[in-house]
Each structure stands twice: as C-alpha cells, then as structure tokens.
Image 1 (cartoon, helix red, strand yellow):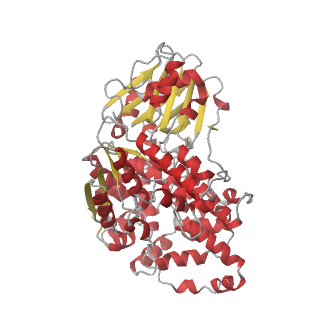
Image 2 (cartoon, helix red, strand yellow):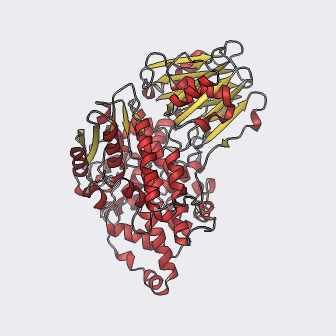
Length: 638
C-alpha cells in the first residue's frame, strides 16, 4: 500500500523534482518504507512521485516503475490479488518480467490491453501511468473505491494524489472550500465519492478511468468501466446460492492472505468479521492475529463478542478500550482525513489501527458485508414502511405522531430508531431512505445554515431529491418491496461504501502505514451478491440470509442472535462531558462564527438538547466539530 502523486504540465512552468518531493513527503505515512520520483527528462511534461509501504516483493518492487524501453512509467497504490495468474497469461503472450511485484503486472497489462487494463484486475487500486510516446496520462481507480485518487486542474496543469494534502504542496494551488460538497457533507456525513471539500478538486469515482492527453485535455472525461448487476439473474435455489457465496468468499479471503509481511484481522464478533476470521483460520497453518476495540458503555461495547469468536478460532487476540479522553486523536483525525468527515467511528478505527500495527502490517476486515448481503436494519425498515403505507389502518395509526413522545436521549437505542422510522412514514421511498440516513435532514439544515450558505448550495426542496435518481427503476423481476430494498442496497454500494466506510478505513489505517484488505468487497463476490434475488439477501425479516446459510458452521450463537450493533460511538455522552469544552472553544468560537455558515442560536440549541438529554445530538455535534477543525487546518492556514 502506498501514496502516489504527480503533475502533468500543459502550458505551465516546468515541474521540478523538489515540487514532486514535497508532494511525496506529506504522504510519507502512507508509505514509510521508501520513496521515488520520476520526471520526464526531455520535456518535464509529467512528473510522478511515490511513497511505498512494502508488502509484496520487498526487494524489487520500488516505484515509479518503468517498462523495458522506459516509454511507460507507473505509480500505483493498492494490491492486485490475481497478479500471479495475470503474470502467467502475460508471459504466455510474450511479456518478460524482471520483478516479482504486482506493479509490473499493471505495466504489461497496459501494454497488452491499453485503457481496458483495469477490467482484468481483481483487487483494490489507484494508479497513474504516463505514456511518454502518446504524451498521455492514464488514471484508474478500483471498482468499489477502496483506494482514493484526487485530481485538479490548476494553473495550466493537472495535479493528482492519493490525498488532497499532497495537492496543496504544488506551486500556485489555491485551497478554497467547495460549499456544494460541504452541503453534501452536512446532509450525509461524508463528501460524495466524486467530489472534494476543496473547490476545483475532484475524486476519480469508483470504477472510473481518466485519460488526459496533453493535446486534447479539455475533452478528458472520466469513463466508468464496471457496475454490478441491476436485476436478479441467479436462477438457482438458496442452497445453490449459499454454495456459490461460500466458494467465492473463501477464495477472496485466501487471495487476500498473500503477503510478505505479518498479517492479521479486525474482529468485532459480528457476522462479517467472524466469517472472515473463520475462513482465515481454515486457510492458515498458524493462529490468526486479531484485534478489537471496545467502550466502557455496555450498549456500545463489543469486546465480549469478539473475545468469544477469538477463543473459538484459537486466535492470538488483542484488545483496546477507548475512552473519551481523546483530544490528541481528534486533532490527528482532522489532519489525516484532509476533508471534514462526520463518521465518529473513525476514532475507534484510528485506535484499532494503532493496536493492529503493533502486531501486523496487513489486516483483513469485514467491511462491505452489509452492502453486499443486505445487513442494515434500514432495508427492513424500507420494506416495513412500504407495507404500512399500503395498509389503511396501520398507516392511520403511524400518522398519529405518537412516536414524537418516544424518548430519544440515546442515539443507539431502540426508541430512537423507532422514532426515526415513523417520522418518515408519509414520504416517498427515496425521501424516507434519505431521512433515515441523513445526518442533518434537509429541513433541519435550513434551520441551522445561514441564508448566505444556503444561497451558495441548495434549498431543502432540492436536497430532498438527493436520492431520487437511485429509486427511479420499476420492478420487473421482484415484488415492489423487494425492489425497493435492492435499490437501497445498490445506492449504499455506490455512495456510502466508498464515501464513508472506505474513506474511514483507508485514512485511519494508512495514517500509520497499515494495509487493510476487504474480502467482502471482492468484485466477483459483489457481482454474485447483486445477481441474487433480493429475498436471498434480505427477506424483510432477516438480513444476510444467504451469507448466514453459507457460513453457518463459522458463526457462533453470539454472532447470529444478538442485535446488529455496528461500530457506534457514544459521542452524545462524550459531548456532555470531556468534549463539551472542546466543542464550545472550537465550533462556537468567534473565529468559527465569523465564517457566517451557521446560525449561532441553532448551534447552541443542538448543544442544549444534547446536554439535557432531550435528544442525542452527538453525531451532529461531532460533524460540526470536524468541519471547523478542517477549516482551521486546511483553509485558514493557507
């Protein structure tokens, strides 16, 4: 795993090695084992920079890497899990290799297939390849957006990097906020997977490539090379589907265990991580190293479940208890995430990465299992509310607003979830789903934001339409309620998985040079899951139905029968104690209020509601805190 950066000049002053070195230096955390710079010797038209975390081929895998005649130069961040089979095929086609690395495989794939080369890769990646003969830069990102890649046009050049902080090192780059992206951040808690919090900076989207020729740069547009099936095509029984899922997932785990450095796993004791560790145990000839995070608050603590799973599989297990005394960690999160990021589970992810890095360099996780196999409660809620809307008596009862009197002082409580479900009962499906997943619902945003901020972004009516394009297709092969769940699962795979989960784990782990691998995000497994009837994934009562069936021998009673917990954090409680002063000194400071983004009285009202336990506003307070810390670090200091 690595950090990459580079510059393509069109009509700007020549790039220097010093400029490239600065871009690489701020990515040193992503690659602590080495660095390299390439600069086109003839024209200085293109420069590439690289920081390396050595995982495969420790001796000869340095980058930037060139092909035999040095007409192609590559910087690459990621892992290609099928590189050995690709290497054999390429050798049979006449290609010669001088290293054992997966990096060189990509060079030869490009020689063989050109811009179609990413379609042959099974893995996670972001790479940039300079074709000196064509004077052309080729950028590519993996199908699910596990590895980041940002790019920007600035002062006659195209800049790219694994993280925005590297772009800020380029000469004449002006760091300004993108208020449309910040509105999306406040709405959903993360910046959209193709946007950036910085004006004129974009992310290459999941499963996209971008080809930029120095002569035709204005016509360059991202191209999408993959998408999962949109309709069920699998015709076998549930048993048939379970057999296919077990085989494909076991293969995905086995491929991700190839490493020349110590390897382990994150273990929560839930279904997904337990299955991954169980399959690792079957494939390994030694105890698997596992790591877990917990909290003193019982409602949020998963350590007993993780310990139970670790004992069952005879793992070498490590634990860490997170406390709210975490001011230093919060400051570090604002540094390494580069953009405001509202998912408070980034904090335990940060600690978990540190615990794991003491023992391993590579760790497998269960991230993506909920999106692949329909694990979230909100899918059941979507089906349930669809049924309520169709039932006159139930709909009448739900509309009486009795839910408004339910206690919601604890964000993670059943009462809070029920209140959120019923509050959206009269909205169309896309808006119901948005209301459930929104951090700040559009109507609340209008109360919190200043008029000037709203004028720069969008009014509430527009924000309510955010998910509408994802709920337009009509059911053809499934009942309407099942089709609604399919559309929600597809939406989460396209937006939430790359925008939130993958951003969280990539930054938390790469901040200390830890590589995370996600078997549930194997594209062959995702294709298989998307091809299944929705009822095989979630039948309206049970999520991950086919996965539970496929891996029943690996799952303990504790994993299968406890309520879904997720990686929730008790930030509402923390903002009533240790973090309250930090919020007041940061978000309610004269410096922050002078930005005129938020109505001060609305911010104080959110804090007071949390103080008095009228509502758990911890997630919103956390989002506001991370936004202001981003402004102070990346905008004010430029």
